[in-house]
Image 1 (cartoon, rainbow, N blue to C red):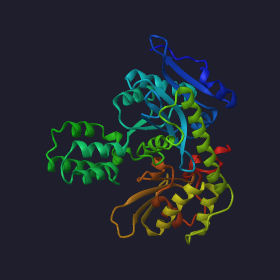
Image 2 (image 1 turned 90 degrees about the horizontal axis):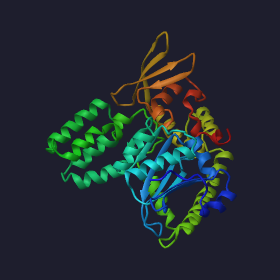
Image 3 (image 1 turned 180 degrees about the vertical axis):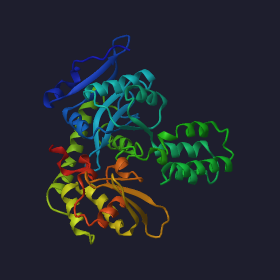
Length: 386
């Protein structure tokens, strides 16, 4: 494979003139024919600079005349909506192509590494991720795992317990116990897919991934939904120039729709629905509308939190809390001097919003505002203006 070209190909000249920050990368085969093509515009690069902590990418076929894989790099923005970072057409899905692609993406994004990546588990893609994004935690798409489990393990009752291991709110010890029982009950000790899956548990088990930030993403369904929507703008008979032109039109359509949640978040406040009016109103001024709704759901559950005990140490105040009528205890610590909270549930680390246990402690302490340490900028109204 030849080195990527740095000049803008002819088909992109018009877009490059219209959009600042337009970037392309392409490679040629031994006959100097176009082999792989990556491109992104200034808006995508700006979005990645803000929301590029979580990156998903997925390949699909059928949207271009040459039946080549279309790869879309995407993430989630502060409105919980899909945002596109980059796009590529590959001549094949070889390891070499998948190694070239993320390197081209990283160059265009000025070397900014994501914290976490989610893919469908393609082996060539997995290898490329480990090489190009060595510091990112690679998660396997839950939907693809469930589909493979259904196809590869034909055992009644297996799928239900596998779902629990995959997405259940388990501790590592609980996962190990349930997994051991699954394997024994269904006589899967020597099943090659099961053996390989267990070896990769840190890439899919919720118990092992807890505390790693994924912004709520568990599947590549956002990528796949984008690919389905593309069908309204792109037909199989389009040549490369037509494909790129209509793809850019699709992106503009997506971005115009983003103006609606921007407006709703900026103007007007949602109706207060809880009895904890002060903290609810504070959250409404900070978070975008969609993220605020998620926080309010947690706030509604905060009344079910019981503070079982408190203990003051030299470093913090330690709260043992439990949900109403449940035995499990969670540890919430509060460093009073720095106003920092932590919880063994680790929802803040995983999703960027405080868990019900932390919010329950805020209510217990009669706080009327969310401490700065519990507000992640990427979910706030101000993130795009800063």
